[in-house]
Image (cartoon, rainbow over all chains, first blue to last red; front, side, top):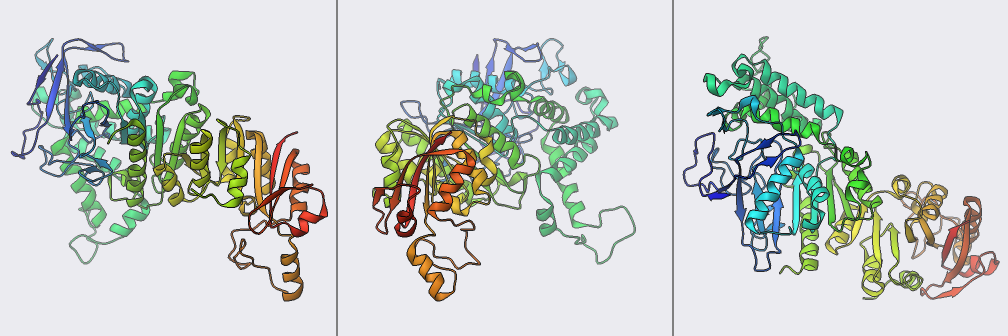
Length: 389
Length: 201
């Protein structure tokens, strides 16, 4: 095991003054659910705030599908602010003056943790599709190894939304004694058929791009940008809501007074999606997108416990607070409530809130004062009962 | 902390260390009191999101939900005590709610305002308008209390739903309690409200 101060990034760092974080490389193999193992392997991560002497104030943030470890500072790849600026920082609900906040890039990702764009030591060439399939549980095992290396036995809280929420649930199921409290949001204990279907559309768009080259585009010097952009466009629609799209764009035309009777983007919503697609391909790796979407598809926590979700949490002492959003149709309230009911049935301590908003699945990343009030109240109460100042 | 008098009366009925579900727990005042004074393992179900936030900030385990739609999710006989305080008159289907409460808890405590009180009866008789009282201060068209009942009505409902009344307390206008005979005519005329402890048949 070795720590480096400069993670190896696929893309060039464009924001020169940004903190690029750290990386930990492990020589001992990481055994994966797919039956294969990875060695050596690396986790890239960021920390914010200071670990207290009792090592009791650590909060782990689990990021969503296309996000990364750059939670609040400037993202060194894009130069843009971190993804959870409204929630995390000095004086924010996840208060970095009070808590030691850790966020690690997931295994299979493309922001410094081991993934398909890494060089396979066995061949000296990028893994591509020879990289093993990873699961949500593999991501959590990797994070646990990182925490071992950092000397953190128990987390005050594990939190995250969407795929981050899946990791939170897996953390609680796999390492209940290491998780004092958990705050999953906008998530599910299993990926639904509809969500798997959307992911498959995205993957097929990538694989249909001739520049994908069977996953070997790095070796062949091409980039499946068109396919990846289409995947992102389709996915991005699912992160919003019909009312939000209507409010933001309606049927407004883009830089023109009348429809053009052509296929160039007439509507503002089309330009918006094109922009989402084209900025995404600059920061994300197509094969990573395939791997991480697959990890979400495979997630079904109850399946590992005889099909009974409550069994995943039997005897657990972790305190839970679950949040969902009324307009989230990707991870709707019913999926989040299902987790709350399973926890209740298991006798666990669980709170659940449904936040009223029209901003869709992405609400957990946005300015939602009621969500912040819930998170602040929950973290205050767990910090108090854990004796964290 | 001073509890509302009817809540204080309910609190006295809860044994030390009990596993308690408070349905319609509001901002968590009773649950917090019971946690501090009786070391209970408490859970709440509450409709209002602001109230749930207040509960979460108090370190209570509260699920945002609706007694009318969510009680079927709870397993049977998992709580020592289930509390429904001043809420049954605001449910859509009181009979179904009561059935679930008695199924979920080994004991169920229900407190309710008595619409049979003599002042309410006289108010309707002499004013000819739907009565409004301190406890029921809404006009007929905007009241959340869509299923008001008298003590006698509630006693009849317990018989229909297969619940056994273990004990009953009459509440006066100052919130003082005294034991009552559920079937007697006196409390139905003179009590402001009542607290019942029920168990499954």
